[in-house]
Image (cartoon, rainbow, N blue to C red; front, side, top):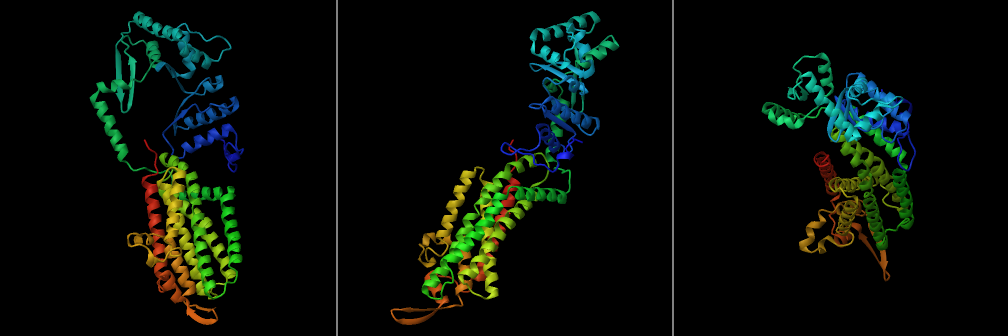
Length: 500
């Protein structure tokens, strides 16, 4: 309909990257508004900034749309070409807020010529109408002609106000029934909304209609599955086209996995090896936690677009939320954490038991998803990216402090003990440490004295961990995920909407 098929697979572009032409961009904007199949489409200067050919293409497509009788097109336009001007069915000429002409486009020149305002030869009638509207003397001449002709033809100065549904028209009363005057007066139809107050029934009818419209549930033009498919396709294309974030997460997970594995390469099962194991596990959690802050920027880029599309009635929040979760959590959180864990696990020399390895990966994934969802909740609740980033960083640091590695849980002051139960680092680190060390034996020699200490004893005395707490910590991390997903869903549904 809008002649965009030839560029359907091209990027629209922006200030830094070139894309489709200006006329095509304008038609894309119009196409977006047509998604909801509006009965009336109002456009404010759709040809501004376009060359004459592009402007002609835009108006031609709008004319075809209006001719299809599915949408009424109303637009404002300045200085159109003559061929563009004659594409309009009706024309309204306004001067300083008052209508000086409203009627068929092809009779505008004859209307003003009978008032002594003749368009010069080889002159664009649209430009001449603009000249009349900008010149107060010409406007006064046209209005004075109306008064003089009314006296000659016996037309009274009284007016008849006609109300039909929501349409209000005000036109001079014709008492002699002259057909030409009737036609002429039809051109002078104007809408005076301030006179609605004189008709109490009309006002009541309009107000009741507005109340009913507010109570009506939004009806979307497509099904939920279609909305989800289109939004997911767009999210996938955005992720593929803007490779920097995806490639960076994968590269960081691989590079840092090799770095951690090289730093703690094949740690031994002694006291220093225990410290290195605990340090490597906590460092992996810290790395995944702070890398999750990238969710702030990724969501901020799409938040404004979502608010606009939601206000236009394209789709409800649900498909957007599902798409955001899928294309943020799977490629940017789950896959990188698996890469990091697989590379570093065997290089460090952690437990070779298969079950222990998969339990290790499960905790990494749950922890990374939980921290990413926490950042998404902050991003959805705080409109300013800088404030959201600062808040996320500070909260993440406090969770690290009470994560069980920097301070023994039994030595935390009583007034601050409750904070550790809000730390995702505590549950992630305790689960990883118990999974790795609880069943191991530490063999070392101190001043010539050899000893054999079970790892479970050190976990209890040094960290204050619960030896049977792996599954409990895993359930708590799952609970964090469910809580943050629910909070994100509620905030997006209730808060992220156009403010009026």
